[in-house]
Length: 507
Image (cartoon, rainbow, N blue to C red; front, side):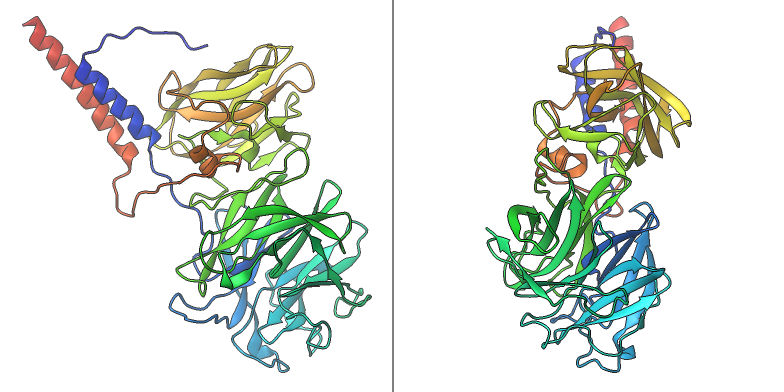
């Protein structure tokens, strides 16, 4: 519990210190979205060996007045912050059978039998298959002709997605105008079953870009609602088998502009993300962005909104939703939150379990830590470590026994923490399900500053929140003076001002 202090100040000093607090709260955040600084539309994201790979349409130039893509690239990252461009993984000039050039659309990849298979569409409605020994390629055409063409289905045959079911069987899903699915043979270049149309009941419409995954024993299908001729969105549907039928459940994300949308969903370190593209500046030059997504207790995915801040790092001066961890102990999960503001909270917390928040930016410095918790019996605590679960201990936040109501706990840090650090919260206690954790926050003020009410404001949700809010993340323009740099000067000015006033009064 923070100790209450009485402070006598003159009015001018109060005004200056309020400005100081406001400056820290408004400290600038560096934009992480888009994650790739070149044309990277239609991102299909796969995780191979703990590394994230993005396969997409390599839009050629921001000045293009039509879609032009001359080849395919692959991008990879282990932390969702630093991305490596593997370069050209396949060029359409290597395809002697191609019927069109510079229309290299949205591909996908899958691993099977020690090879990575790369399924790629061309603008004339054909889909080919290549293979390589690495997810970063290079890939080589292994069929010498199209796997899918106009004789295969009546759909416009683009946007393939390769899916492996829980029984090991593999499928290709594709289609513009309508969605088709066929099971692949073990050679990965022929079909075991004839293509069947996938139906989505209750959907406003289906355009293209299907992407499938599993969660909670159910099958999820992401797709573009209406394509380039509208303000498109990524909608999703749920079914009990990969072939459907599926039932429409809603929208996950939309860039909110006139132009197509296309994306994918993936899991890394127990965290879920949606990849999508935004327009830079038009529908003919698009770049990949990432956002957190979460599942509510019924398995639905609340809609999220585009941000500039993105994922993979955290603004330490803002409220950080606990469910937006970067990594965690396997047993830790999250659930619908009963705290004001709804959202989610982290649960199944046991002694020695942990959460990781990587690359937390403390700016000019933080001296205190807050946690929004709900506890029952037992005296528990949150250890705050830097670098690893056994790294430097910078504070311990006590979580005493309670009646399962939500309260905000505050503790001082051992010293002022500045710069960018990986933060590990290690939980300690004597029994299972120690408590629930809604959010955390670091502050430059010893009393934690003015806390957010409940589980977070809309603006906080848009930056580091639960994904249920809508807000704006404002970033200073390049070359602007970091606001945090002004804090020492303003504090010094306040102190000098007050000392001079006291001296003058004494005289």
